[in-house]
Image (tube, rainbow, N blue to C red; front, side, top):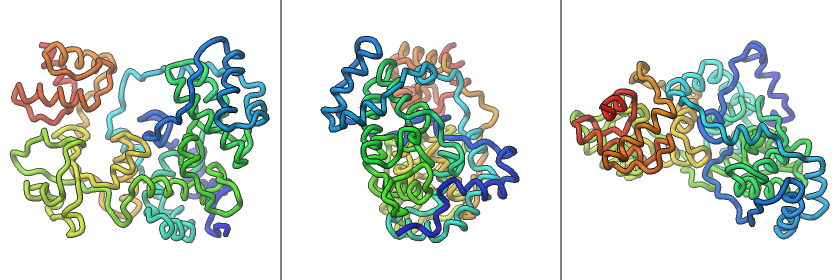
Length: 428
């Protein structure tokens, strides 16, 4: 059955033009690609495709044809898809680029959870009520989270990327740092063409191959994309029904809990051990409450949540807002494994529901560490015996653990948050 509440075929731009007083003057959407690798959902493993990484491009293309055929791609599909395709230098440049500065999380959230985006999301929820009713009934994922992802990933379908997915993935497959990723995703893109969901010209997306209104990578698309409007094609580009249902299907299959919350802003008791505030350190909500953790307004937590596993999140250290995050927050991270992204989706969904925003203040005076400074921090931590892992400028779990150990050694709150003050201390 076709979705009577479907906005598809880009008719959504009409409502956006009204709600944003004209698309040309609207705030450009901030996409997930600006805080994490453009390929989303981030957790999908590459398919088991033999890696071909030798010879010039034409030789590679001929050899990879055999690989594609061995993976079930018909020769005529491969030949038509790769006809006239040459590597795109801009793709390799984008893949190798590493920004010198990270945007502070509060800047990203300010841009995402904006009055324009909240208002547009609410209007689209009302306009698509019947569609969203049916998606919620089928998959159990709430409309606010789905529309938040839709708004962040593509500006509610306005900015989906215009690059040829086949050319992008062929470029990544031929050379660069992610040939295994490129080749597995290219096979998946060819499967999409073979299935008949879209033509080669319509198979467009980001430089890394993320596609459609909610930015699926091809492997994930093939596993979770849904034909929710009943037209025989899984069209995440032009059909809002298919795009939102596909996202709901992905979250459901990842472990989404129907009716569950993502989390709460909380306040911590005096003397709280900040070393416990780590995504890997989980206790039940009941156990956190027994330690004195309360909602920011002082309330306790719901009866249904008492036995739920949860973690304490300090995205800007102990001087910034604090959150207790539950299962559904972790499911959002499977879509894009970025703290900024997970909080942005959650807070935007809350804002569209009419829930209050963050109460505590961000440490807006903090200066983010540059790439070279992050590498310097890791190098100094290693020199002092704290084992932060590779000095690559990525402040991951090992680096946070090392930072905590160093903070404890000098009597600072062990929140694992690295800022310029910490770098100055360790360099003395």
